Length: 111
Image 1: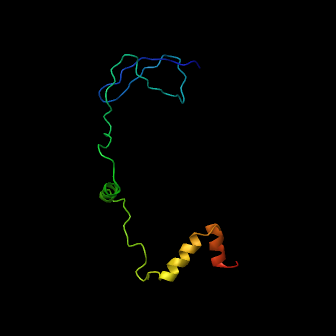
Image 2 (image 1 turned 120 degrees about the horizontal axis):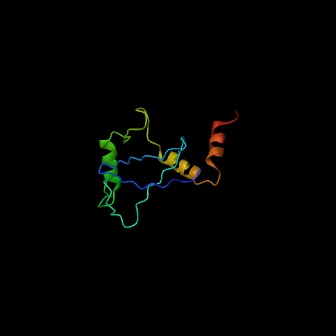
Image 3 (image 1 turned 30 degrees about the horizontal axis):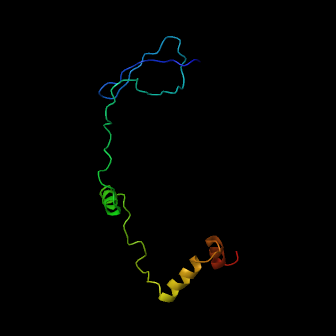
């Protein structure tokens, strides 16, 4: 099928109504919206970009207000802090060139 070019007007409610010529096949189509040369370009009515950069704390507040912020405590109530020796051992493990999957397999032992 050859492309059909129509000229239409988008109304103030951002709605577009098209009447297609008789004989236009039905089924999926691709619709491309392109302003005509010389037409007035109006600013978007979408959300305005932030005047100031979004800080981590501002983002956290927005997530909290939307009920989407996961807040602790994340450890079980009976968890105990690691000893300095345990923290050091973890640091050594993660500094290893060995992939973490191999470390986990070693820790689990033979299957």
